[in-house]
Image (cartoon, rainbow, N blue to C red; front, side, top):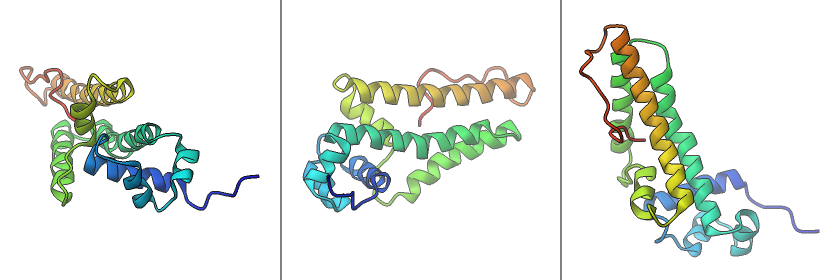
Length: 161
C-alpha cells in the first residue's frame, strides 16, 4: 500500500498555475514545479502524470477562476452599459493588480503553443469563444433594448479572456 499524499492536489494545481503563468509552459521545468509545490518529483508524476497533464489542469483552473468570473459578470442582471463597463474595468484591474504583469494566461498559452499543442489550443479557443459569445450576447441585448446603437458590433476575436 502506498503512502498517503502529504499535500493538497488542488492547492498544488493553483501553485502550478502561477508558475506556468509566470514562466510559460516551455520555460517551466519539472524542478520549478517541484520547488513551487514543495513536493518530490515522484509525488508530482504519481499525482499528475506529466508536466503537460499538470499544465492542462492549471489552464483549466485559470479558466475556472479568471475567465468564468468575467463571463459571470457579463451575464448578471442590470444595465447593459454598466455591465460592459464593469467587465472592462475588471480586465484592467486584474492586469494592474498583478505586480508581475503576467497578462492573460490564455493569451500567453495561445501565443506560445498555438499550432504545436492541440489540447492547449482547443482549450484556449473554447475560452475565447465563450468570452466573445458573452460579450456579443450582452451587446445584442443592449441593442434590442435600445441602450446601445445598432452600429456597435464585436468583430471575431476582439473579446479577450
